[in-house]
Amino acid sequence: MLFGHGDDFYNSQNEVKINFSSNVWHGANLEKLKDHLNEQFDKLTRYPEPDAGTLKRLLARRYEMKENNIVVTNGSITAFYLLAQAWKGGKSMIAIPSFSEYEDACRLHGHEISFFPTSDDLSELSLEGQDFCWICNPNNPDGKLIHRTELLALIAANRQTTFIIDQAYVAFTTEDMLKPSDVKNHPNLILVQSISKAYNIPGLRIGYLIASPEKTEEINKYIIPWSVNAIAIEASKYILIHPAQFTLPIRKWQRETAELIYQLNKLDGLEVQPTSTTFFLVRLKKGTAAALKQYLWENHGILIRDASNFRGLDETYIRVSTQTTAENQVLVDAVKEWLAQQ
Image (cartoon, rainbow, N blue to C red; front, side):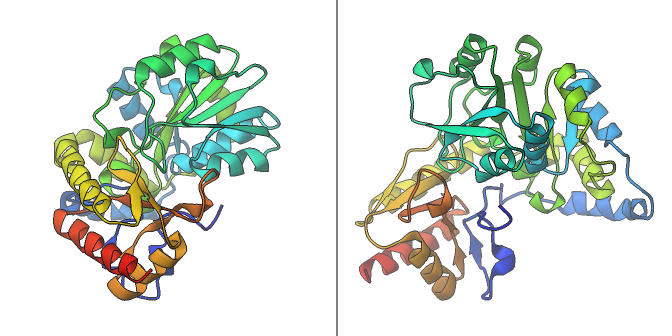
């Protein structure tokens, strides 16, 4: 899906003053990273490493894994397409509502696809005959999550199925999530992680997957040389070497999220869905997501995510990612204004 994702900032004909549509940490201080990348500018005159090898080694040391457990990709989305391609024609079961690119990647490479609601009891989920199970955890768009023990039990009980777990939003919760070391004990587990979300650098497109050496060997057959650019590699290495500069204040952000949800729930005409992260779904009881998005965009310079194109949702759902306290209040007041006109 080339279009229809959350952050269509690029498509705006009006000034976007506040962006609630993109699930990234909005408060990252990138000044020192900017200075570092300016110093690395000359790297643009040379080809990058064919496989982002220096970054792969840093990740391996960080997680106490071997290098052949890791594949660095041009954003986590590239990992999904590589996985679908490496095992083209497989049978895939996908949790919904969730990121549409799992389905798009599988369809492109001839997978037989079925779906199950994220609200299902996982202990009763039947995966017989399924080659792959795709789960976003924490889940996009609703912010729900499956606890580590429950997920590991599901993986252990279905060894014939490979679980592709998208942990792009792992930094956006304080709950216990899967760890890279879990791959050592569960060869049917593939973890996909994003570097861009928690550090507010989505434009650099950088991510990676962690899997058994047997699986990464198969995936590497489809990697395009130089698919990760030199600046993305250098930015990621800098972040890994200087983690203290990029500490995400998750508990503060969660408190701001709770307050925003409280204020929105006070409005007559909508209902906020429970979340375990800093983004969440809102169901409108009147009007449509498209109409609200257009109103906020044109009248207040506010961008939200129309979530109607997520499989399993309809035209009444929007997704919101919490911003600053002051910006959150601007959103609440603007939504209240729109609801009064419905």
